[in-house]
Amino acid sequence: MHTVIPIANAAPANAAAAKPGKVNCTLCSFNRFCLPQGLADSDVARLDQIIARRRRVARDEQLFSMGASFGSLYAVRLGHFKTAQVNIHGEQQVTGFHMAGDLLGMDAIGSGSHNCSATALEDSEVCEIPFGRLQELVMQTPTLMQQFHRVLGREIQREQAIMLFRGSMRADQRMALFLLNMGARYSARGYSAASYQLRMSREDIGGYLGLTIESVSRLLARFRKQGWIKLDNRDIRILDRDSLEALSTGREPGADSGAESGAEACAA
Amino acid sequence: MHTVIPIANAAPANAAAAKPGKVNCTLCSFNRFCLPQGLADSDVARLDQIIARRRRVARDEQLFSMGASFGSLYAVRLGHFKTAQVNIHGEQQVTGFHMAGDLLGMDAIGSGSHNCSATALEDSEVCEIPFGRLQELVMQTPTLMQQFHRVLGREIQREQAIMLFRGSMRADQRMALFLLNMGARYSARGYSAASYQLRMSREDIGGYLGLTIESVSRLLARFRKQGWIKLDNRDIRILDRDSLEALSTGREPGADSGAESGAEACAA
DNA sequence: CGAGCCTTTGATATAGGTCAAATTGGGTGG
DNA sequence: CCACCCAATTTGACCTATATCAAAGGCTCG
Image (cartoon, helix red, strand yellow):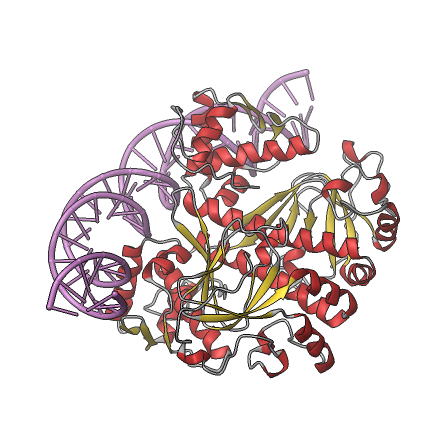
């Protein structure tokens, strides 16, 4: 299950500089979103040593599948992934979209086999972190242990936040929050919060927000007509952040001062 | 935030033998559902030493509240808890029901403050495990580290399972699964899987299943009329486990052999 | 024994799903 | 480079599972 997936021919444009092989967290521009966050240089170097290799995953290829046995965690180095569970109807229920610096595979720590699949949304690259070796290193490195526990804890919180917003917000509010949060995540990584590309299909968005593809399409159309977003296929530009935020936090988009609690639930 | 909540007068009947004070995991009859699972006796003894104390929590009292700062994990020793987040409408969204052996507070590891509240459903008792000391011990005890990571991983899986069944099952299926899973959990602890008491209100059940209180009531009434359960206030007896299971797994309760996938999603 | 809350039951409303069909876009082979 | 094909998306009409609103019992506890 953990063999390198051969990539047919050309490497993706943005992977040009990456030769599969040893990685180097110290030099990785996303290390502050990843396991090395907050670690001393010497500890990062030790982390480097246990990381098996980089591994390319072509678009639509699975990094791991539901039920696959667990051996490693994966840090997204480049590209985008979705994680999904299939429900009793055979549809994909998307549990998250993941970008550079995000850690994948934590769902399998509890049982030793993956609870969801991870699929590349574009040609991507991950760092493979053998879990056994990570545990050994964690034993020897207090700051790494703390950081690892923090990452696991954040995953728990992320899922609680998804439950909360799926369970209690209207479809349009969920969509608004989704668009804003994707922007926020890009912003944290140095890209524009207002203008980005949706890497996933409408179906994936629906699977994430708990909506049908038709509803997703209608909502985006409505936001566009209202002048809140500009949408060109999968390129999106947020034109009226305030209205989206007003909608997602409960006060109606007409927007005077609202009474509702200003919960800033996380999404995506 | 971590002071002992004084209990007005009588201890709950089932807590009769428990003097608040030092605990002893070795003797605790629920240790195999809890952190000590799989640990050598000597390691359990060390775990005993870091556990601060037992702490009583009266019915309706909060063990911790949303936003409270994080210092300890808590193992339920006795009684029942619910954990809940409040949504943008001010309603409680229940994220779980917890019984003896379950660990509470893991949602706070990521951020240092609690993401949900934990409320006792009856007079209860927990063991307080200071997180800092636990981390120290984890560093010195490989088996404890593995077990702790397993517990965190299971929490992640538990939440994914909740997402899955909330997002893709009909109301009646969710209810059926809920009743069966509560039974399974009691069964694992040596009690009857078919006959138990619902410790939570209809409102809490609704908050957990993503339903209104009226829907909960109607569904239970329907199950009763169909002869699948016997319901006397909060005492429930499962009379027709097969029909409930058939419903929850997708084949209609009429029940010949079904075509659907037999996903055995976890709940509660 | 009374008040208030929890629960049940009925009637009605609606958000979003389902089904169906048109349109668009992107890739691909000639 | 262009025509064509297939998949993704959009749009419309209608429907249904649950929510909402309303009111009437029952427990429980003071």
